[in-house]
Length: 310
Image (cartoon, rainbow, N blue to C red):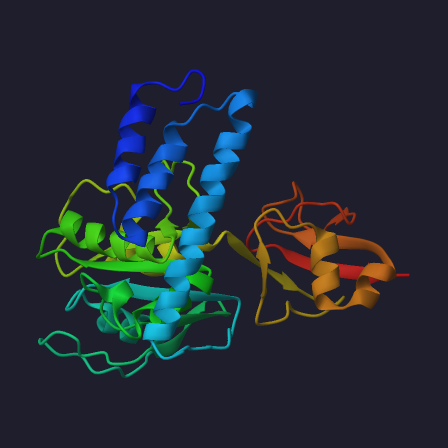
Protein backbone atom coordinates (compact mmCIF):
# COMPACT_ATOMS: atom_id res chain seq x y z
CA UNK A 1 0.00 0.00 0.00
CA UNK A 2 1.38 3.46 -0.85
CA UNK A 3 2.46 5.94 1.81
CA UNK A 4 -0.44 7.91 3.37
CA UNK A 5 -3.11 5.66 1.83
CA UNK A 6 -5.93 5.40 4.33
CA UNK A 7 -8.98 3.29 5.11
CA UNK A 8 -10.94 4.47 2.05
CA UNK A 9 -8.13 3.36 -0.25
CA UNK A 10 -8.03 -0.08 1.36
CA UNK A 11 -11.80 -0.48 0.96
CA UNK A 12 -11.60 0.62 -2.69
CA UNK A 13 -8.77 -1.84 -3.32
CA UNK A 14 -10.95 -4.59 -1.88
CA UNK A 15 -13.69 -3.73 -4.42
CA UNK A 16 -11.11 -3.95 -7.23
CA UNK A 17 -10.14 -7.44 -6.09
CA UNK A 18 -13.79 -8.51 -5.89
CA UNK A 19 -14.79 -7.08 -9.30
CA UNK A 20 -15.41 -9.77 -11.92
CA UNK A 21 -16.52 -8.14 -15.17
CA UNK A 22 -14.49 -5.46 -17.05
CA UNK A 23 -17.26 -2.93 -16.35
CA UNK A 24 -17.15 -3.68 -12.63
CA UNK A 25 -13.37 -3.40 -12.64
CA UNK A 26 -13.50 -0.02 -14.40
CA UNK A 27 -15.92 1.34 -11.83
CA UNK A 28 -13.83 -0.06 -8.98
CA UNK A 29 -10.58 1.36 -10.37
CA UNK A 30 -12.23 4.77 -10.85
CA UNK A 31 -13.26 4.74 -7.20
CA UNK A 32 -9.75 3.66 -6.25
CA UNK A 33 -8.31 6.57 -8.23
CA UNK A 34 -10.65 9.04 -6.53
CA UNK A 35 -9.39 8.05 -3.06
CA UNK A 36 -5.74 7.42 -3.91
CA UNK A 37 -3.08 9.78 -2.45
CA UNK A 38 -2.51 12.93 -4.50
CA UNK A 39 0.99 13.81 -3.28
CA UNK A 40 4.04 13.64 -5.57
CA UNK A 41 5.16 10.28 -4.23
CA UNK A 42 1.91 8.69 -5.46
CA UNK A 43 2.14 9.94 -9.06
CA UNK A 44 3.36 6.56 -10.36
CA UNK A 45 0.51 4.80 -8.56
CA UNK A 46 -2.12 7.12 -10.03
CA UNK A 47 -0.60 6.74 -13.51
CA UNK A 48 -0.74 2.95 -13.17
CA UNK A 49 -4.42 3.05 -12.17
CA UNK A 50 -5.25 5.34 -15.10
CA UNK A 51 -3.48 2.99 -17.50
CA UNK A 52 -5.48 0.02 -16.20
CA UNK A 53 -8.74 1.99 -16.62
CA UNK A 54 -7.78 2.95 -20.18
CA UNK A 55 -6.94 -0.63 -21.17
CA UNK A 56 -10.17 -1.95 -19.66
CA UNK A 57 -12.19 0.67 -21.55
CA UNK A 58 -10.51 -0.34 -24.82
CA UNK A 59 -11.34 -3.98 -24.12
CA UNK A 60 -15.01 -3.18 -23.43
CA UNK A 61 -15.32 -1.04 -26.58
CA UNK A 62 -13.81 -3.81 -28.74
CA UNK A 63 -16.20 -6.36 -27.29
CA UNK A 64 -19.17 -4.07 -27.96
CA UNK A 65 -18.06 -3.40 -31.51
CA UNK A 66 -17.70 -7.12 -32.17
CA UNK A 67 -21.09 -7.86 -30.61
CA UNK A 68 -22.81 -5.14 -32.60
CA UNK A 69 -21.37 -6.37 -35.86
CA UNK A 70 -19.72 -3.03 -36.48
CA UNK A 71 -23.05 -1.13 -36.58
CA UNK A 72 -22.42 2.61 -36.52
CA UNK A 73 -24.21 5.84 -37.28
CA UNK A 74 -22.84 9.08 -38.63
CA UNK A 75 -25.27 11.98 -38.59
CA UNK A 76 -23.94 15.12 -40.21
CA UNK A 77 -24.16 18.17 -37.97
CA UNK A 78 -26.33 20.95 -39.35
CA UNK A 79 -26.96 24.40 -37.93
CA UNK A 80 -25.22 26.17 -35.07
CA UNK A 81 -25.43 23.21 -32.66
CA UNK A 82 -26.53 19.60 -32.40
CA UNK A 83 -28.78 18.52 -29.51
CA UNK A 84 -29.74 14.93 -28.66
CA UNK A 85 -33.01 14.04 -26.93
CA UNK A 86 -32.84 10.97 -24.67
CA UNK A 87 -35.18 9.38 -22.16
CA UNK A 88 -37.00 6.25 -21.07
CA UNK A 89 -40.05 4.85 -22.92
CA UNK A 90 -43.05 7.21 -23.00
CA UNK A 91 -41.07 10.10 -21.52
CA UNK A 92 -42.29 12.43 -24.26
CA UNK A 93 -39.21 12.81 -26.47
CA UNK A 94 -41.19 12.67 -29.71
CA UNK A 95 -43.73 15.20 -28.42
CA UNK A 96 -40.93 17.64 -27.62
CA UNK A 97 -39.20 17.06 -30.97
CA UNK A 98 -42.47 17.74 -32.80
CA UNK A 99 -43.23 20.78 -30.67
CA UNK A 100 -39.82 22.40 -31.14
CA UNK A 101 -39.16 21.59 -34.78
CA UNK A 102 -42.47 20.89 -36.47
CA UNK A 103 -41.32 17.35 -37.24
CA UNK A 104 -44.06 14.75 -37.60
CA UNK A 105 -42.69 11.89 -35.55
CA UNK A 106 -45.23 9.22 -34.52
CA UNK A 107 -46.47 9.58 -30.95
CA UNK A 108 -48.18 6.67 -29.21
CA UNK A 109 -49.03 5.53 -25.68
CA UNK A 110 -47.18 2.25 -26.09
CA UNK A 111 -43.41 2.15 -25.38
CA UNK A 112 -40.56 2.10 -27.90
CA UNK A 113 -42.49 3.95 -30.61
CA UNK A 114 -39.26 5.48 -31.92
CA UNK A 115 -37.29 2.74 -33.72
CA UNK A 116 -34.51 4.87 -35.21
CA UNK A 117 -33.04 8.36 -34.73
CA UNK A 118 -35.49 11.11 -35.73
CA UNK A 119 -34.40 14.64 -36.62
CA UNK A 120 -35.74 18.16 -36.84
CA UNK A 121 -34.53 21.76 -36.87
CA UNK A 122 -35.42 24.25 -34.14
CA UNK A 123 -35.43 27.96 -34.88
CA UNK A 124 -34.21 30.34 -32.18
CA UNK A 125 -34.42 33.97 -33.31
CA UNK A 126 -33.24 32.90 -36.75
CA UNK A 127 -30.51 30.54 -35.49
CA UNK A 128 -30.98 26.96 -36.68
CA UNK A 129 -30.36 24.16 -34.14
CA UNK A 130 -30.42 20.47 -35.05
CA UNK A 131 -32.39 18.17 -32.72
CA UNK A 132 -31.99 14.39 -32.80
CA UNK A 133 -34.20 11.96 -30.88
CA UNK A 134 -32.69 8.52 -30.28
CA UNK A 135 -34.71 5.39 -29.34
CA UNK A 136 -35.78 5.04 -25.71
CA UNK A 137 -33.18 3.99 -23.15
CA UNK A 138 -33.67 1.10 -20.71
CA UNK A 139 -31.62 -0.96 -18.27
CA UNK A 140 -29.01 -2.67 -20.43
CA UNK A 141 -29.39 -0.28 -23.39
CA UNK A 142 -25.61 0.22 -23.61
CA UNK A 143 -25.12 -3.55 -23.96
CA UNK A 144 -27.75 -3.95 -26.70
CA UNK A 145 -26.71 -4.39 -30.34
CA UNK A 146 -27.32 -0.81 -31.42
CA UNK A 147 -27.23 0.91 -28.03
CA UNK A 148 -23.57 2.04 -28.19
CA UNK A 149 -24.08 3.49 -31.68
CA UNK A 150 -27.15 5.44 -30.57
CA UNK A 151 -25.36 6.70 -27.46
CA UNK A 152 -22.43 7.79 -29.64
CA UNK A 153 -24.80 10.27 -31.31
CA UNK A 154 -25.40 11.89 -27.94
CA UNK A 155 -21.71 11.66 -27.12
CA UNK A 156 -20.65 13.88 -30.04
CA UNK A 157 -23.56 16.32 -29.80
CA UNK A 158 -23.23 19.75 -28.17
CA UNK A 159 -25.94 19.09 -25.60
CA UNK A 160 -27.87 16.12 -24.22
CA UNK A 161 -31.47 16.84 -23.25
CA UNK A 162 -32.87 14.21 -20.86
CA UNK A 163 -36.66 14.07 -21.02
CA UNK A 164 -38.36 12.70 -17.90
CA UNK A 165 -42.02 11.83 -17.41
CA UNK A 166 -43.30 13.88 -14.48
CA UNK A 167 -46.04 11.29 -13.85
CA UNK A 168 -43.39 8.72 -12.93
CA UNK A 169 -40.42 8.61 -10.53
CA UNK A 170 -38.13 11.28 -12.02
CA UNK A 171 -35.12 10.37 -9.91
CA UNK A 172 -35.37 6.72 -10.95
CA UNK A 173 -35.55 7.71 -14.62
CA UNK A 174 -32.48 9.92 -14.31
CA UNK A 175 -30.56 7.18 -12.52
CA UNK A 176 -31.18 4.72 -15.37
CA UNK A 177 -30.20 7.26 -18.05
CA UNK A 178 -27.04 8.29 -16.19
CA UNK A 179 -26.00 4.66 -15.64
CA UNK A 180 -26.36 3.82 -19.34
CA UNK A 181 -24.12 6.76 -20.25
CA UNK A 182 -21.60 5.69 -17.63
CA UNK A 183 -21.39 2.28 -19.29
CA UNK A 184 -19.99 4.00 -22.40
CA UNK A 185 -17.69 6.09 -20.17
CA UNK A 186 -19.65 9.34 -20.29
CA UNK A 187 -20.80 11.26 -17.21
CA UNK A 188 -23.70 13.65 -17.59
CA UNK A 189 -22.60 16.97 -16.13
CA UNK A 190 -24.20 17.71 -12.77
CA UNK A 191 -24.60 21.17 -11.27
CA UNK A 192 -21.75 20.22 -8.93
CA UNK A 193 -19.75 17.70 -10.93
CA UNK A 194 -16.74 15.93 -9.45
CA UNK A 195 -13.54 15.07 -11.31
CA UNK A 196 -13.74 11.81 -13.23
CA UNK A 197 -11.78 9.83 -15.79
CA UNK A 198 -14.91 9.62 -17.93
CA UNK A 199 -15.89 12.16 -20.56
CA UNK A 200 -18.17 14.90 -19.21
CA UNK A 201 -21.20 15.80 -21.32
CA UNK A 202 -23.30 18.92 -20.78
CA UNK A 203 -26.94 18.05 -20.20
CA UNK A 204 -30.32 19.58 -19.45
CA UNK A 205 -33.21 17.77 -17.78
CA UNK A 206 -36.72 18.55 -19.06
CA UNK A 207 -39.78 17.57 -17.02
CA UNK A 208 -42.65 16.62 -19.32
CA UNK A 209 -46.37 16.00 -18.71
CA UNK A 210 -46.61 17.04 -15.03
CA UNK A 211 -44.95 19.92 -13.19
CA UNK A 212 -43.48 17.68 -10.50
CA UNK A 213 -40.83 19.02 -8.15
CA UNK A 214 -38.04 16.60 -7.30
CA UNK A 215 -34.42 16.59 -6.20
CA UNK A 216 -32.29 16.99 -9.32
CA UNK A 217 -28.49 17.08 -9.51
CA UNK A 218 -28.62 18.38 -13.08
CA UNK A 219 -29.80 21.67 -14.61
CA UNK A 220 -33.57 21.32 -15.06
CA UNK A 221 -36.44 23.19 -16.78
CA UNK A 222 -40.13 22.53 -17.27
CA UNK A 223 -41.25 21.68 -20.78
CA UNK A 224 -42.76 25.17 -21.25
CA UNK A 225 -39.29 26.71 -20.89
CA UNK A 226 -37.33 24.15 -22.89
CA UNK A 227 -36.51 26.34 -25.91
CA UNK A 228 -34.85 29.05 -23.81
CA UNK A 229 -33.29 26.42 -21.57
CA UNK A 230 -31.59 24.71 -24.51
CA UNK A 231 -30.20 27.99 -25.79
CA UNK A 232 -28.88 28.97 -22.36
CA UNK A 233 -27.07 25.62 -21.98
CA UNK A 234 -25.35 25.89 -25.35
CA UNK A 235 -23.27 28.88 -24.27
CA UNK A 236 -24.01 30.77 -27.48
CA UNK A 237 -25.12 34.28 -28.34
CA UNK A 238 -26.60 35.64 -31.56
CA UNK A 239 -25.53 38.91 -33.18
CA UNK A 240 -26.52 40.65 -36.39
CA UNK A 241 -24.31 42.28 -38.96
CA UNK A 242 -25.30 45.25 -41.11
CA UNK A 243 -24.00 47.30 -43.97
CA UNK A 244 -23.71 51.06 -43.70
CA UNK A 245 -27.04 52.79 -44.37
CA UNK A 246 -28.97 49.52 -44.49
CA UNK A 247 -31.12 47.43 -42.13
CA UNK A 248 -29.52 44.60 -40.08
CA UNK A 249 -28.92 41.37 -41.99
CA UNK A 250 -31.01 38.30 -41.27
CA UNK A 251 -30.51 35.57 -40.11
CA UNK A 252 -28.14 36.52 -37.29
CA UNK A 253 -24.80 34.85 -36.60
CA UNK A 254 -24.36 32.38 -33.73
CA UNK A 255 -21.18 32.96 -31.70
CA UNK A 256 -19.71 31.54 -28.51
CA UNK A 257 -20.47 33.63 -25.43
CA UNK A 258 -17.54 35.96 -24.84
CA UNK A 259 -16.75 36.36 -28.54
CA UNK A 260 -15.22 39.64 -29.70
CA UNK A 261 -15.66 41.73 -32.83
CA UNK A 262 -12.57 40.08 -34.32
CA UNK A 263 -14.22 36.67 -34.05
CA UNK A 264 -17.27 37.98 -35.87
CA UNK A 265 -15.13 39.55 -38.60
CA UNK A 266 -13.42 36.19 -39.23
CA UNK A 267 -16.78 34.44 -39.27
CA UNK A 268 -18.17 36.78 -41.92
CA UNK A 269 -15.05 36.70 -44.14
CA UNK A 270 -11.31 36.68 -43.54
CA UNK A 271 -10.99 39.94 -45.56
CA UNK A 272 -13.13 41.74 -42.97
CA UNK A 273 -10.61 40.74 -40.32
CA UNK A 274 -7.45 41.37 -42.32
CA UNK A 275 -8.63 44.77 -43.56
CA UNK A 276 -10.48 45.77 -40.38
CA UNK A 277 -10.55 49.49 -39.59
CA UNK A 278 -13.24 49.80 -36.90
CA UNK A 279 -16.77 48.67 -36.12
CA UNK A 280 -19.90 50.42 -34.94
CA UNK A 281 -22.10 48.57 -32.47
CA UNK A 282 -25.72 48.92 -31.37
CA UNK A 283 -26.85 46.90 -28.37
CA UNK A 284 -26.18 45.87 -24.77
CA UNK A 285 -22.38 45.74 -25.11
CA UNK A 286 -22.01 49.51 -25.60
CA UNK A 287 -23.10 52.51 -23.52
CA UNK A 288 -24.28 54.43 -26.56
CA UNK A 289 -25.75 52.94 -29.72
CA UNK A 290 -23.52 53.36 -32.74
CA UNK A 291 -20.33 53.47 -30.63
CA UNK A 292 -17.04 52.86 -32.42
CA UNK A 293 -15.13 49.81 -31.17
CA UNK A 294 -12.08 47.72 -32.06
CA UNK A 295 -11.40 44.04 -32.69
CA UNK A 296 -11.20 43.16 -28.97
CA UNK A 297 -14.62 44.53 -28.05
CA UNK A 298 -16.68 41.80 -26.34
CA UNK A 299 -20.09 41.28 -27.89
CA UNK A 300 -23.38 40.57 -26.14
CA UNK A 301 -26.49 38.82 -27.37
CA UNK A 302 -28.60 40.86 -29.75
CA UNK A 303 -25.81 43.27 -30.72
CA UNK A 304 -25.87 44.74 -34.22
CA UNK A 305 -22.40 45.18 -35.72
CA UNK A 306 -21.39 47.28 -38.70
CA UNK A 307 -17.81 46.47 -39.77
CA UNK A 308 -15.75 49.07 -41.61
CA UNK A 309 -12.66 48.11 -43.58
CA UNK A 310 -9.64 50.04 -44.85
